[in-house]
Image 1 (cartoon, one colour):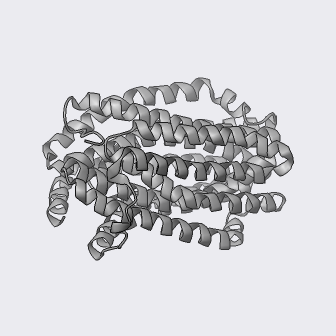
Image 2: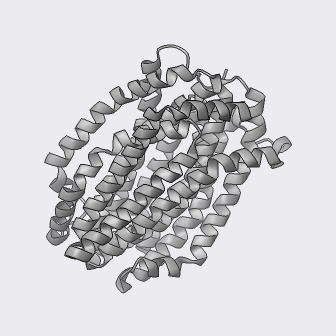
Image 3: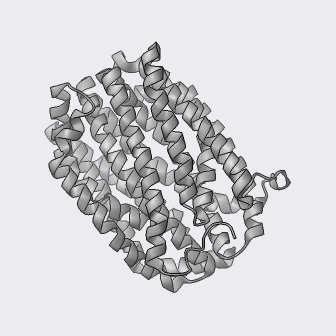
Length: 449
């Protein structure tokens, strides 16, 4: 039998054993992002950091589409894996890959063609406009391959195997970290940083394809199942579209954040970018919890063991206590050290610390927010996740406007509004869990299938 049925045996032990490789994987991904930021900041300077910061919302737009298809694959595969429907996994996995490839081509192509519009909306400073364009074009070409690769990785995880993705993504990150300074130092500058990422994403796809062809028959690409059937597309749309719109709704708030930081010039944009590296680092680590919850909850639903889901949540709360405490301690004692590793510009460092002192409270809430969101996604109710994230984004937008219009303090507006986003998200997900409506919804969802 391929993978592991996480509903069997000691639940807490299964959750921890599944989460640890996920945590290490995401830790390595986050460390790469930080190392990449260090190379760009130290070798290219504040303009390099500001350029990548302005590229971030556009990259996240592509990431939101990728997240929709990868989460859809995770839920569908996990359900069928736990219910022992092995042949159905073979039937759906190739069409999922095809959808991922098509979405990658469409998403990256659209963003490349409309780059000028997005950078204008972001109020990108003129002195970094060309660098931002160069970085994005190269990066988005590589991101096409990432759609296929990451869908494979999430499908592997859905079978209860979180160790193989750890190895696959570690190799990818090593390639990226090695190529980054080499490409920058040979004179390619910001183009080199983007090229290193693109080459790494292509390598990730190649390594992933080799793995599934040799080690897991369930997830192999099979020409026999290339047809996109109506029922399959309906199920993908039901899960994937709300997830996609949920993720996209948050992009508008990030565009607003970058726009505000750009109002403070290259220094402000750099400071926001540095703190966003930490936010991205903590959020990526938190997605370990979210992915764990999504897969385990989906497997229990696939088996029809709905009564065990409360136990899953209780164990999840136990697991997030340690990372929450570590985040709080890090923010108190290591803020200056973190900000100073990206730049020697004291003005940027001071502004970064000022911003972090405001937004840091929100970062402590990341583990619990993602734990709750993982539960919601695991139930297959991506519509509710869309509603939650949309309302959270509206709340952040309103808070930004109120503070900025009344006090004209961009950093204060950014910090408080981001905190409002996390609090809103946490409240809505908590209400959903304690309402018990999810039980009726997942039973109805299971009956529909």
